Length: 303
Image (tube, rainbow, N blue to C red):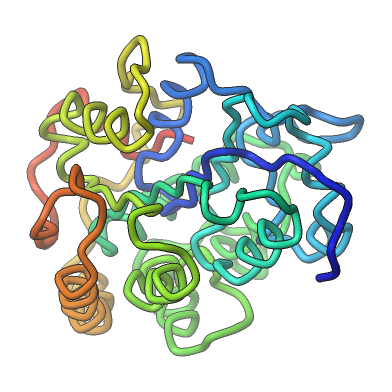
């Protein structure tokens, strides 16, 4: 990207992972004083939280000025983009901030929260299924298609894993970008190579469950700010059709891939220590995950 006139980009990037509690954290930060992205005519409501600039080519190709227009254009504002799909696009974030000028590339704060990948995949499935049962067909988009069979039937989770998740995990491109979030080590390695490690705070979803106050403290120390209020549980996807546990077949199929990837993550984080408030060593994922409290169950499928 060529040098541009001075533009101001968000001071915080909450980059994911998708279905790992980013909405609860984002709501706390927005309510605590961070400016939401501005909505433009025709934008869906959720663009006021997540701009989807870096992950959608038809938006990214419009350039940094298109992105900056959604945020206050001064260097004293606290603003945030909480697009959970940004995790896979470190290079685009780097190029955009580099082109923006000033010291924005070295000043941006990046937050990522990681969740055990099998439970994250189940939460993704529940979210997609809920939407397909409750949204009019005209309200759905291509993202929802991954949970549908050719006759518009919602796939079972076993079918979803064998026909959607596993093929996605065996390919670097094509359908299944949401599933490939679970390759945490691969994605974070790119971020660590492009940004100073002290600019990146890696959080644990398990800690968010067990001690949300501690997550708040880590974020406040990382940002150097006191954020009023607290992280709240929220869930707009409650349904008696929600699947709470995967079958052994589905769990084993996913775990056969993710177990090795998780080991690479632990090694990467241990050899690349982050800012002092980050939990170290990073806690190993519970497999398949802990028994969930009633309050935390509400967070699982928070949008």
